[in-house]
Length: 581
Image (cartoon, rainbow, N blue to C red; front, side, top):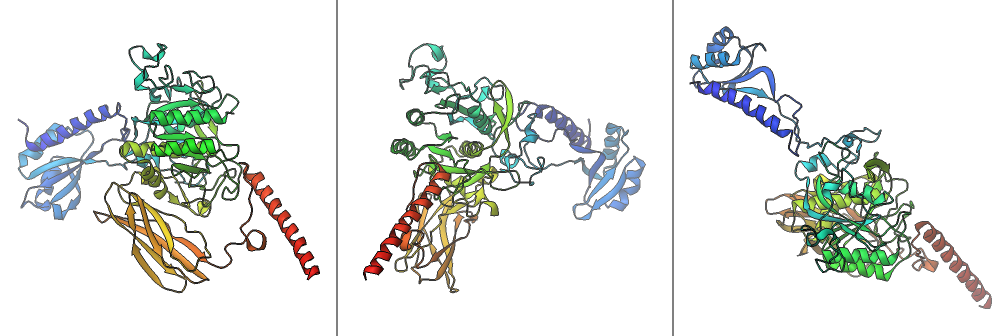
């Protein structure tokens, strides 16, 4: 019967060989291509009271060479020729009676879960190594996130778009199956089995043709779907943010890329009725619609997140509105586009108060119909990155409410200079940080103000794994005074006040949250001015007039013309008043 030394060593080698073979069929690919231990090396533990010097000659006699000692552990590292018979060597070690155990010199690897999809290396947005000439790490940290979570088919994402190629090899396994219309021949039996008003809607709906075939005859919707959830680690094509997810094709845009308000509303209503928790909306146009705003708010009341592309006009949507991304329901998240160099994409809209954060949107490789893969650019591509990370987070925290989910994404963005003053958070999407168990904090921007008489109400949002104990706001004044106040909690929302300040004061603040384990998270630092001049911009110091058509470029130009016209009219009136006086 073999001794303990031989048993441990040989059993370890056999077990590792077995595990390596099994790993090839698993979703989480470890570094199986690497040997799991260094050939010709082992670590040998001496028994208590035995010294290295006393066994050195003994080790040499059986073919082992001591190369390093760990005196505090009574451990030595040995090498041996690669042709050594391991059973004989281990038996000789056992026979000496001087050794407690020996082990292979194992390899260890960084824990970055990497899919085996053919074109994954071209997906810079998931893991940017500079492969496209951009900046290393200007990405969403997908491999680090995948160490924690790779997605779940229990999480449903609605793609309100041109439809989805549900037969695409990289998407077909992740297409939603309506449980009320699937199985036992329900898919095409001509009966509304789930009584939702849509017959045989087993994989979504085409709101243009009014049938159950939401096939993509454009490519846009399929591209968005692939970003959210192309099947990962399937030896094919690209990887979605979610390796497993359920994608619903909600087709309201035709093959020419256009759709109507009524069909958009119906798609949102369908999603609301079916309880689809995450909606991707990579579309825009038209002016403000109260009907569309009402549909989005109804989705909000139902606990549904509404991700919306910020638009591709290169405009500031704080001044000229873009819809639906500028609707003010609490569930709307507006997404700008970033590129591989950690810059705001040149085409991307932005807005310090209307665009929440940036996500990769330039030269994005994803699925297109007929089993193809293509690169598209636009805030249309950035939006499903955000929606996809939301689905990944919901897979990790299934009971999270939609507002907490929103602020998980916002509080976990990577702050970068390129997005400061261009987005609410000043940051770019980060999937790994969004999965954190530590507090994630977003402080709302207090705008510059003329108010010098009443306190300033500050809001912040803090989320984690439901263990936050308190949130404290720290603030300082340009006069050198600083103070703090414990904020009041209402779910993920925290509120506090900063006392009124004199004109000319600059107020700087941030919010720090602490959980029951003592872990802390901090918001970005926010600044505002107390000034008599804040209200200017219009005529005679009045707030400027504005025009909103839904087209950012035209809105800005028409607003300038309108204010200039009013100014000239008032100037003429003033001159007449002076003459009369």
